[in-house]
Length: 127
Ligand SMILES: [Ca+2]
Ligand SMILES: [Ca+2]
Image (cartoon, rainbow, N blue to C red; front, side, top):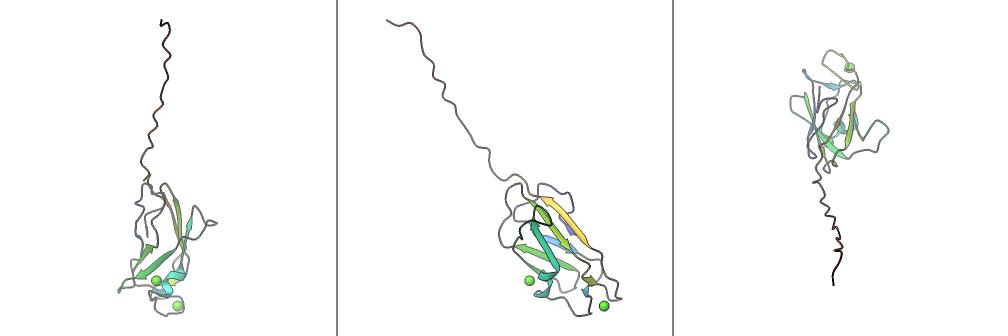
């Protein structure tokens, strides 16, 4: 289960993305997931699966159930983000997960710009 969920909007620019599993997970070859190798399990891109990579550092909790993805930089205003975790992890009974993805977007964090139009009024008449 990925948070923000697929289709979410108005996500904070500095959001921490999480992927939660309802049981302990490990790599398919039965080795443990670490704060180092967890990074390679996750695809995080701008806009869609073909977008530019978004830099992050992921960690996994001591229960091996919650992956937290810390973004190196805040997301942009109204940015669309694509995150995917492939069928690369399994539970302790060798049941591999299926591919899970989420596409969400950040809110508008840019204040409205103000423009003032000066209207030149020409007064008629005069001396
Ligand atoms: Ca296995
Ligand atoms: Ca990491």
